[in-house]
Image: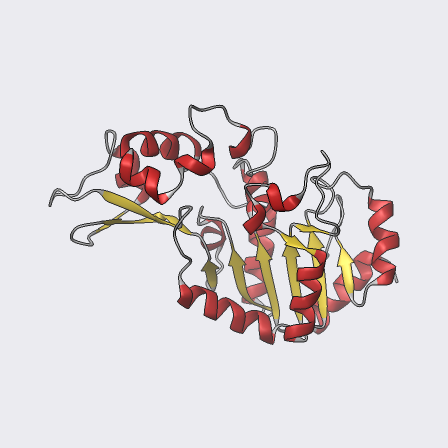
Length: 265
């Protein structure tokens, strides 16, 4: 059985699929990821992006923070792509139980997915830091400079910045869904922790967004997940699909996706 047929069989037989994805899901919608040529970490600014989108920078230099945030992190014209739509369809069919995402763009919900766990928050939710009043993305875009509430408080996006902790309720719910999954579809995994430029994953600013293969296999063992499909594998590690096809023979019910893979529903 080839890889596409095996994946198709897993999906057909499962009614408890969880998708765990990140920035790569939205690139087809015109939103650059963090690592590509046009990505966030390849932009030139007076400060590194990981500094600008930190809590301390937001507090000390809100004007600079919002200039970067509005220019480089907001994509109000973006529309859901085929991946978003396919996941929403699988949820309607009762197969996908949850989408766990590191994205903040809200495109999974726009496609129709209902159970979306946003680990890093959402640009569509914004709150006054003084009175707690809610503001929409449109309110932020219309504001001149730093958005300010009628009460005088600064409005902060409900997005997890560097130096801030994740929402523990979202984490707990994500763990519960993953622990019950028959099939986990997961993106951004390195089999050896080395990027294609030779640098170590641990030294990369996006380390917290990635899995090593050992971490993923531990996840599979801990939660007794039957099948795992790994996406976004070749772009950053510089290895061929032939390498991964050979490598997956050593693994138990782990499949590597590839460019051009089609799943017929």
